[in-house]
Length: 155
Image 1 (cartoon, rainbow, N blue to C red):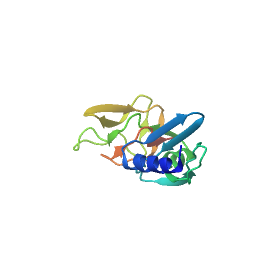
Image 2 (image 1 turned 30 degrees about the horizontal axis):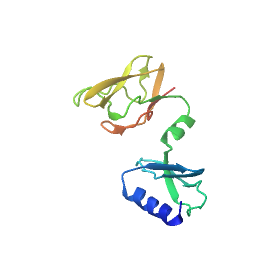
Image 3 (image 1 turned 60 degrees about the vertical axis):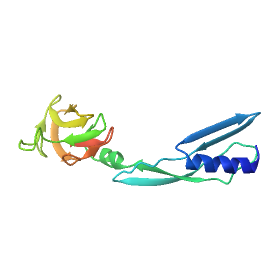
C-alpha cells in the first residue's frame, strides 16, 4: 500500500462516522481507530500513540483517552460502596414531597431500597448489598449516573 493511499484512508476515516478500520492484504496490515471521548465530571487524561503494522509507517497519531477516576478515589476510602447497576437518572426519594430513602448517618440493612435509577422510563429500585451506616452519599438527586458509578459509601 502506498503512503499516499494511507494518508487518504486516514482522512476518509477521520471525516466519516467510522471509529475503527482494519485492512489486511498480502502480509501487510493496517489498523486505524479514532477515539470518541466521553465527558466525565472528574477525569484523568492519558496520552497514547496509535501504531500501524504496515510496511510503510504512517506518522503516529496521538489519541486522548479519558478515564473516570471517581470510582478509584471512592474505593480508597474506608467502607463498602453501593454502585449503580445501570445508566440512568438517580432519585434519592420516591417523589419530590417525600423524605429521602436514606440520609447520611442512617443505618441500612441488606436488601433495603436506598434509591431509584430511572432508565428508559422504568424505575429500578437500588437495594443495599450491605448492612451498615451510610457515611457518604456520592450523587445528587436527579443527576445522571453511569454504569458502576458509586452511589453510597457504607461502613
